[in-house]
Length: 80
Image (tube, rainbow, N blue to C red):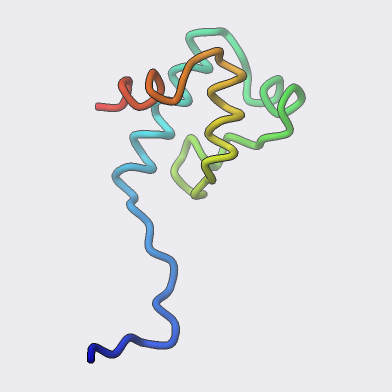
């Protein structure tokens, strides 16, 4: 039977986080929205998300997609 360490730590896919952050930043800039306005309207601080300094949940992603009026499929199709 395999053994696992008691604490596996937090695994992060930094490549994906960087690409997702870049996608969010592009969506925001295309629409002429500042980080401050985005935070005021959503309560989400996306500065750290855009810089891949913070992981984010599916709930947060759904809120971001709703704000930009896109589907999750459209969000992911824009990640290269």
